[in-house]
Image (cartoon, one colour):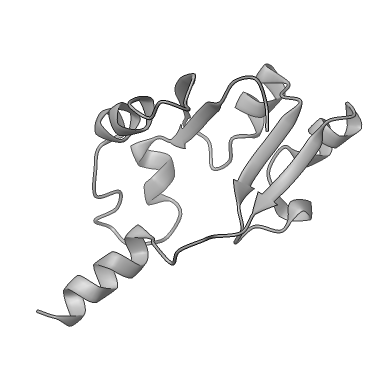
Length: 111
């Protein structure tokens, strides 16, 4: 959807504040960044300490902002600024039901 792909990840503290459990994130920020950076389509990886990536989005001023399909466009952090600059905001539908939350539930259910 664009010439390059920047991925911004929640810091460990930010991820914990998402309310998914005291043991989250399962993998430390450095490890999560390394995995994402290894993807050929990713141009750069960064992180944010806040609850949302709005500051990162405002600083980068992307032409296209993309988030997973569980987020409607009007609720995507930074969407208004991107749209106000004439950019595009896209919520991509999930092709497969894969999430850490679902995996943790499956594992805990089998114990």
